[in-house]
Length: 504
Image 1 (cartoon, rainbow, N blue to C red):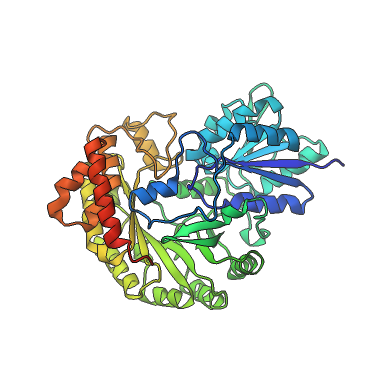
Image 2 (cartoon, helix red, strand yellow):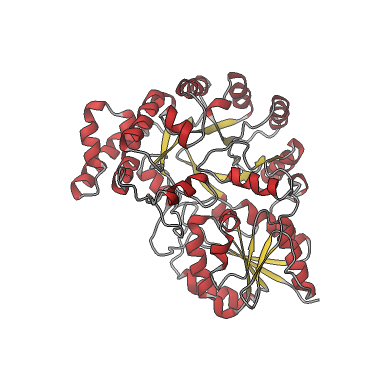
C-alpha cells in the first residue's frame, strides 16, 4: 500500500494564535495510524497587510512591551509561492485546513492558489461548523467537518487510502461532482481522555515561544475542558452545546480527567522543555470543589508556572490561594461590559459589578507574580458611546488591582446570537466575515460609528488610569488624524513609563 500523505494548512495571521492544539492532536492520530503528515503554517509570513495581532495589543497598551526577535525570524518569501512549491514536492493525497472565521479569507486565498493541483480538500474548525454552506460554496473546498474532527479525519484518511467511498462519514459534509452536498449527522462526542499526546514536531521551533506579561516563555497550550457551560451571547460555545444535544451526540462541554491532564503536562515538561503552561479553557474554574482539589494535588508535583482565565463570579479566596501555592503566575478575567443591565440583557451575563470588583480584590491580595489582566468588549449591537464609558468606569474601579486591560471590538462570529441580532438590525451583511479581535470594528451602527469604537479601543487603558481632567486630551488622541496620532504617541509614552517601566 502506497504512503498516504496529509498536508495541514494553518492560515494564521502574525501574532494572532499560539500553537493550534487541534492540528498537533490530529497529526499524532494520523501518524499513529501510519499516515505521513506535513504542515504549511503562515504565522511568520507577511500575508499582505503586515498585521501583527500581538503588536496591536501592545500599541493599545493591552499587553506589556515585549521583544520576540530572539526567537522569531520573519519570512521574506511569498507564502503563495512557497505553498505551491510545497504541494508540488510533497504531493499530498489530502489537504486539511483548520480555520476560525477571522483567518478563513486567508485560507481560501491559499487554497485558491493551489487549486490547480487537484488535491482533495477538507476544511474544519469553529467557523466551518457554523457556516458550512458558506465554506462549501467556494469551489476550492470539497469537504467540511461540522463539529469535532478526531474520528472524522481519521476515518476519511483510512477510506481514501483504501480507495473506499467516504460520503457517509459522520461530521462531514461532502460535495459531490454534481455540486450536491451530502450532510452527514454528528457523531458521538469524542472521549477526550482517550486522545493521544499531541505532536508538536510539525511546528517551527519559534512557534513554541510566546510573550506573557512582557517576557518570552517556551509555552504550551493545555486542554482541561472542551466547551463552556455558560451561555454568553457573543460566544459560539452555547451553539456547540445545542448542536450536540439536538444531534443526540452527547454533551459538548466535557472536562478532561486530572490523570489525562497530568500525563499531558509531564510530557510537555519532560520531553519538550515547557517553561510555562497556558490553560486555554474558557472558564478554567468550571470545576466542582472535588475536581478542583484533585487538580491542586496533582499540580503540586508539576512545578511549572501557568496562566488561566475564568469569570469573576467563580473567584473565591480559597481557590486563588491554592492555585497561587502551586504555580498560578498570571490570570485573565472577562468583564466584557460595565453596565449591569446591558450586560444582563444583551450579553446574558448575570453578575453584579460589586461581585466583579470583589473578585479583583481577592486576586490582588495574593500578589500573582505577573498580575491579572481584564478583558472588555466595545461596540456590541445597540451599544452607545455612553454605555461604553460605563465599561471604562468599572475598569477605573479595579485599575489599581490589574496589570493590563484588553479592549476588543465586538466580533459577530457565526453561530452566536449576537451575530443574528446584528444581521437582523442591519448592522452587518449576512455574508460578511468578521475581523480578528484586535482588528477593526465591523458593525455599522449609526449611534456608535466604527471610528468612535476604534478610538475607544486605542485609548481604553489610558482612560482607565489617567485623571478625568485629561479626558478631552484622551478623546482627541482617539481620532484618526495626524494631530490625534501625535497626542496618542505622547500619551502612550507617558503611560508606558508610568505603568510598565518596572517590568514584572
